[in-house]
Image (cartoon, rainbow, N blue to C red; front, side, top):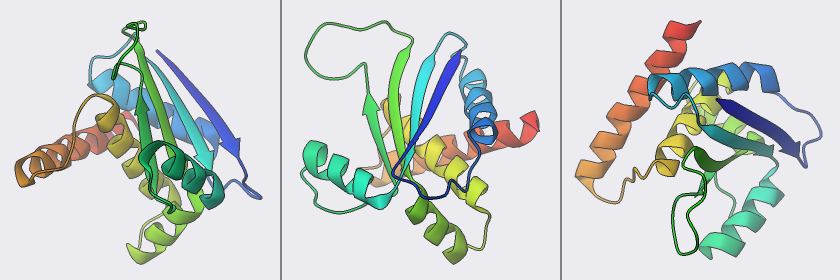
Length: 147
């Protein structure tokens, strides 16, 4: 499996790439996605707002965006290419403080959420939301077990 991490627009990176990479690898392993490739971008609010406006027509910053490679029209890509998860570190930091947890724990939660969106999970209905929440908890448990 391959996990690619980049940062954009951040004055200070409060999460080390290596700390997030092993967490992503633990999640992928727990899903049986040993041949998968995942791209993660840690960014500022301006970058995520621009992406949200361009691709979702919502002119606002958000905490996480997911761009699946296996969705939509066009030729099928390699089945192991999952897509991109974009996480706003400033938003994650605020949410971590509000939830009284560390920034790495919040970013790990957002990564799990984004990864599930790449795999086709959604939370548009109450049932979907419950299923996604349960799967998120499984991914977070896999990260804890990998420590």
